[in-house]
Image 1 (cartoon, rainbow, N blue to C red):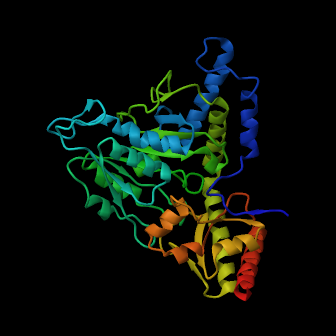
Image 2: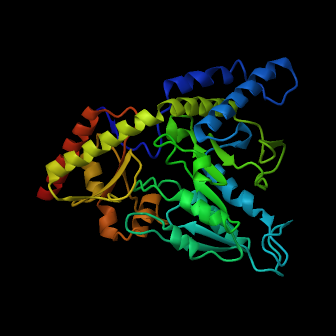
Image 3: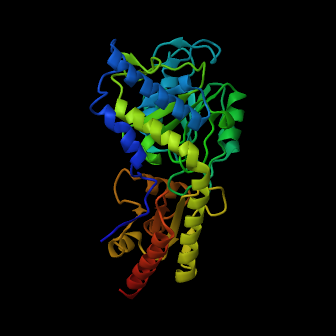
Length: 394
């Protein structure tokens, strides 16, 4: 049974060109770039080429790219690396090294949206353990986090705001640039998780005006376990891991050379293709929605339908329990909420936009990729429709 893979927001297969770019660095060029002999120079050059490729994808300078083990580490470094500078003194803009913060001054304050990735939320909760106050900013029924909602919570001690570029569950694209402008006018840093957006839409850090921004290679046809953090030039950051210093002093440990090379190859490919791919992905999602509406009449609701969304992502609430559809239409790989505690990302986000537990249980998240075909979309429509019909008769 051939699978129809419609869960590209969770992970994507590596592109053949990416796999090919990595091969020599498993065997021939296995040295560490810091070694002082001629054979290590090829490794060092490959890393810097990858850094240049990622910088071109993000619209920044190469020295603003810090390689990480993936999106989770990038988000942790973006949140905690800024927070590892404790603010002290009468002026909260003054700071001195040291952690946790002094009890003689008000604790620093952070704002984090409720629909962030778990890696951002967990890092923010760790800030609370270290003495920070954290406010969780809600979204509306379309998944949009209001800039005004953020701005209304700014305080003299607010030092950090975290807002994702796009939500991987309902696809909502957030007003990052507006929040960055409002934050910077108050001297507040802004961290942006862009892992769900890169490869789906163009991402330019200069246009977004963020301070830090995270990417994950496996979201755009690169290897798992490889990612990067954009760190704006001149930004004060401290490492969150310790040992032999790498990556401009912000990361310890030996470089994952094959992963970095693969990330660079995926970034170069994405920079060339993202504009064309965006239109194709949009057309495929529209075909899916139109097909389901034609087949199931009014028995579906497209979530976040009336706001800007990722072109490859659509969350659909059906009249049938999602688990029953997954069990019946087993040829389709598609995402649904998992019944567990703590709640998974899909459950958290759907609760945040006001969905009931019953509605959450009837929601499927489809995300198409560069290799998805129209034929696969049409077949998926038929399989979902058949599963719904079967469930209605059971």
